[in-house]
Image (tube, protein in one colour):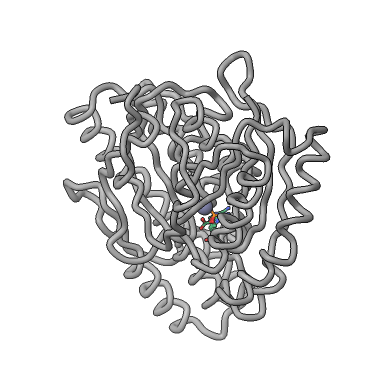
Amino acid sequence: MLVLGLETTCDETAAAVVSLGADGRGVILASEILSQIALHAAYGGVVPEIAARAHVEVIDRLTARALATAGIGLSDVDGIAAAAGPGLIGGVLVGLTTAKTLALVARKPLIAVNHLEGHALTARLTDGTPFPYLLLLASGGHTQLVAVRGVGDYVRLGTTVDDAMGEAFDKVAKLLGLPYPGGPQVEREAEKGDPARFALPRPMIGRARPDFSLSGLKTALRLEAERVAPLTGTDIADLCAGFQAAVVDVVADRTRVALKLFREQIGHPTAIVAAGGVAANGAIRRALARLAGEAGLKLVAPPLELCGDNGAIIAWAGLERLRLGLTDDMTAPARPRWPLASLEPAPAAA
Ligand code: KG4
Ligand code: ZN
């Protein structure tokens, strides 16, 4: 089974070809990514209109390159998947319309993939992780703790009441004068800094529901930064270290609570899984690994190149759906908002 996957929901244009390996995991035959970071850097964030135009300019070329790298033609694929949301509508339309056109021309099934499902199923692409598992999905737009029970079968246990985790990293970076995207920059600075110098809050810790709140932490950091301004290199490193340490504590506490809820409501998870751009953060990964170890579970965190947005996770989610017979027709809409928990469980998993 071979699936082509297209990703255009945010600031990455990506096309990949994934096949189903004999061991049930995915095999990535090609994964082409063109980041638009340089186009948006001057604005400190993604500009939707610039993003949509940039996707249009490269999607055809990137798709052709992915097929060539995989050494196949369009007629060889079993299905064509595109992320149909959630995301910036202009970009989503580019990927979805391209996939629809290719599916029509090549007479192949279309799979309209939820971008979050792409992140949610990555642990099965890389490790063949069996259902059910506890997922921490943390990216620039989303922060959720989810019980993954099957393809299309998601129970949201907790979420953020304000900023997404990646967004908080990006905002902190911006107010400290670090370039976009901020997550990796903050992590790099944090490694040099003293996490104990600034006393920052740990919002939500101890609450019974595994929700997050990150905007107060960001505000506390801004006040500290204003207090010591003008900032030296050491100040920036210490502020980043303090911020990251607070996020790590919050993540560990919230995930522990979600695990308890999972065991009460869902059953025994096979693993704790991290996904989304923020899952690239080493300190967060270490905290999750510690927590998983204490709980007698395995932590499955994707390799760094599969944490952020890419075509392989979309192709894989498409493959998982295709093999259950879950395909879409030409009326599949582009959805700027599309919660993971609103998907329908596959009949086989119900
Ligand atoms: O999943 P992703 O590539 O795109 C979205 O769907 O949002 O996530 C991007 C987000 C950005 O906010 C970025 O700053 C954050 O992930 N990120 C990180 C790290 N690498 C990327 N946050 C913290 N630490 C990192 N190392
Ligand atoms: Zn993403």
